[in-house]
Length: 113
Length: 112
Image 1: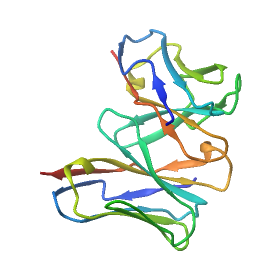
Image 2 (image 1 turned 90 degrees about the horizontal axis):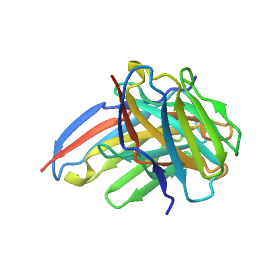
Image 3 (image 1 turned 60 degrees about the horizontal axis):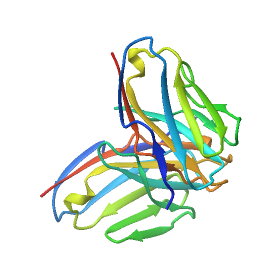
Image 4 (image 1 turned 120 degrees about the vertical axis):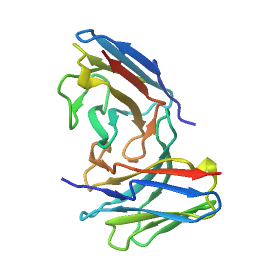
């Protein structure tokens, strides 16, 4: 069974600060996705990383896939209250189909104004 | 944009009642999924479907069944609701083998 550990579980910081959240596994994934979920809503896909060492930027969000494709990080620069939410990572195994997706339990992020 | 619509955002049912949760997607995706999300447990896959009338068990299918009579619609059925099925239920769709999930807004079910 593939497991994805996300850390920290909870994070509360002030507006304008930087932060990094992590998604780690002992398993290799063919790709890894990050989702953001706001309270009372469904998760929304932010990005997919596919290649080991890949870095993708989405405005103030920077996503990195580890060289060995076992881990990923999300760095937010100058956090804003609109960044508040649950951040989920999901790894795709070598099998086909979303039944092969493994979700982490998420990082609850609160940005205080 | 992909639109995944779940019929009910909030439901309150009694133990033993039959519950239907409906999900419709408008992008002609072949694959559809039902997850439940609970604090501390994350998202867990209940059932998924790769085609009309086709269904596969996920990680926690016990107590649930599904129906996919049309490509755009995937229903989750609780034959006899129990209190431990109180949860947030999330439907998702996916195009082909992209591995990218598009989620609905969720249905929060409370079983009393």
